[in-house]
Image (tube, helix red, strand yellow):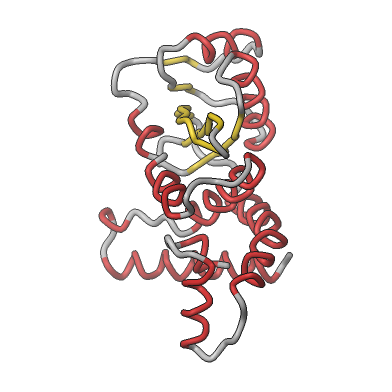
Length: 212
């Protein structure tokens, strides 16, 4: 499961990697494991990471599911960690409020600052929910959220698009949680500190998976 969610691999790729290590398992078994255990592991990882940053960057991109257009809403904090995602059919104030409520519940509180694009749905949701966070919509200020879509786009292409909205929601939620756990700012760290952070990430993964 870690190989599948951490890298851009197919189930058959993971099957071959395990076979090379002497582990015989079918790609279908790996698919069933990911579907059964992935959400539980993601919940454990999110529980262990606690509340993330207090500056929320929100953005969305469209995805195609069986020829229909859906929207992938994503929120990241000031450090680039994914706060939450939501796959929705609509792109309106109602969907924005639904996403805001999901974020508020998951993070256990409201942000200090909110950064979005200039479309009115976020402003309406911000007003209707009575949030006190400063709302910024400046040009280029939301690049952090826009860049965060790149990994999902790569997986979407590799998987030849998602088969259903539910599959997209399940996969991307687990993908984001595991990505957060192993997202170490290597360019900011000396090699020894980077290795220590990576070891900590593996310990967190072990605890999250063994404690399920």
